[in-house]
Amino acid sequence: MFHGPDWPARPSGLHVLYLVAAVALFAAVALLRHGIRPARLAAAVTAAAVAVPAGAAATAAAPGGEEMNPPLARGMKFTARLVPARVRDRYLGPDSRRCEKRGAVTYCAFPRYVSWIPLWASAVEPVVEALPPAARGRLPVVRQYSDSWWMADDHDDRSIGTFMVWGRAGAADAHRGALASALVGRLVRLRATGDDPLAVAAALALLMISAVAAGAALGWGTALTLLRMTAVLLGAAAAFTVSDAMDADTGATPVPRRARQGLRRALGALGAGLTWAAACAIAVARLRAGDELRAPGMAVEAAVCVAVGLLSASVAARLHPGRVAGLAGTGGLLAAVSVSLVARGPYWPWPYPQEDGWEEVRHGWLAALVVVVALLGPACGDLRSRIRRPVRRGRCGRGRPAPRW
View (cartoon, rainbow, N blue to C red):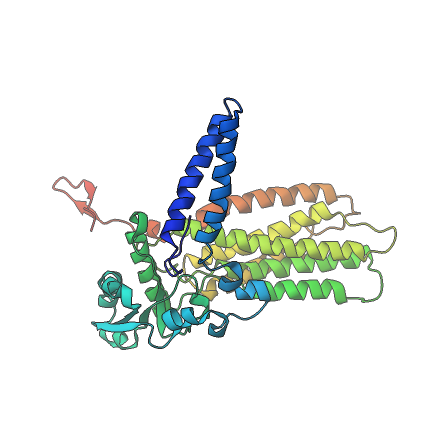
């Protein structure tokens, strides 16, 4: 059974009794498969009668859901006053930790974990040594938190957390990497994704489709125009989800850039797609009686708009990281839409569903979607592929790659 390092100690005698009874119970059940005998049945019933109360009594000292998770159980904010007094004194009080300074970093550990401070220092010191001297005066404190009660503790920008497990099951390297990453993230203040523009665009899109001609039914032409405007708006906003603060790093990173960018674009496309689907459902519900929208064809148009925005931003992110890539993605999408609106001809890409060329243009949108999606893969490749290894000339003029640095 799982037992947290900050849980109260279990009674060993009852725990041993429970384990013995559980073994006897499983053995009796295995024997019952070969035939029900009175002795075997009595042994199984007796073992169960001992194992259940012994196990309940042995685990009674462990924190329950009400004690460990007051926010979920009671709908209250997790604060120190909601936890038992023994927990506040041992893990949350002002004297619950002992602090020790090593180099430029201060480490605060629970009394029984002070011997772990050198392990934490081995993860933090390489990061500190790589910093310029001027930046070493604002380093955060490495503070140990309780595994079960950390939400009730004080948190601020002046500290980073480490917990009550280190190196278990051969995970020492993973724990060192997590602590070092926490320090790096606090120093450079990395943000995970630029999803704010997409959230704002989603709210505006749903508000627009709901508020235009409020209280009256929508004609199919108005609904079509609003959905196309929504597609362009969501495509421009989805471009900002490509922004990655680690794009400029050409060294080793925990997750390859291709995976990071693929996940960002998938989440951006998913958010934009769900918002457009919701807007389409609202538009269909507001249509006049007898009108209809060809939603599948319009969904392909919206998908191409989102994909073009993501592709433009992905290409721009390879040249300049940050929010500039999102702006470039928005500009690329708006430029493509502007050109397509001006260009006229038999295959104009924005016809009405009732026009003769609707089916042919719909096939063209499908082909464009396949091409743009296919280009998204190479656009999120590793930036290190642009760094060419120098060529060293031999005596005969033949080039050969220089050794790795």
